[in-house]
Length: 234
Image (cartoon, rainbow, N blue to C red; front, side, top):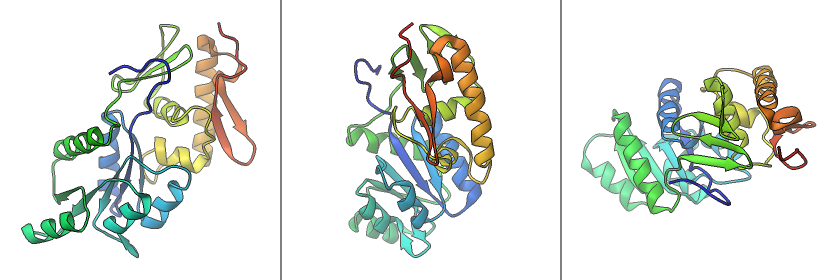
């Protein structure tokens, strides 16, 4: 499925998992499918991340600090896949009856989780997307390639993830903390890392011919924004 005209955004998936190693693995796998995936450890962090926009899908551990996956899904008003450590059929049936859209029992296979995410996202009308187009810039999500006026732009994996975060959607201001959650593995990097990667991304996009600053502007005391408004068409 390729976008044209006003491209549909990739699916937004939020992972809430207290265990840092599992959280990192889940994020990496879901990003491989082209989902814009953020990850946090607690329900409070999830509500903070989703102040402006709810996710298309929540993947959450069943038991959270001062909350639960079901309660968080209700608050965010989005489908939820519950990850439970309880054994037996009864807990799974209970979670489904109480409103879970799907339940996976730990330990589970990453490919099974990815398939279940794709199924729920298709039902919600979001689905997978191969490409996002903003003016002359094309970002191939599944191939992890960027082209500008049909010429390749070589980006590192971190720069590619950062560009995707800034493009979802174009024009939205993203704070440094937002970009860390969306483009860095959990518990890695910091505000200085974001500034450094933005600088190199700007330089590469500018050298590729996207105009001064590569379309990325700094919004004082807020963060960064990607927009092609005001840039030359060629």
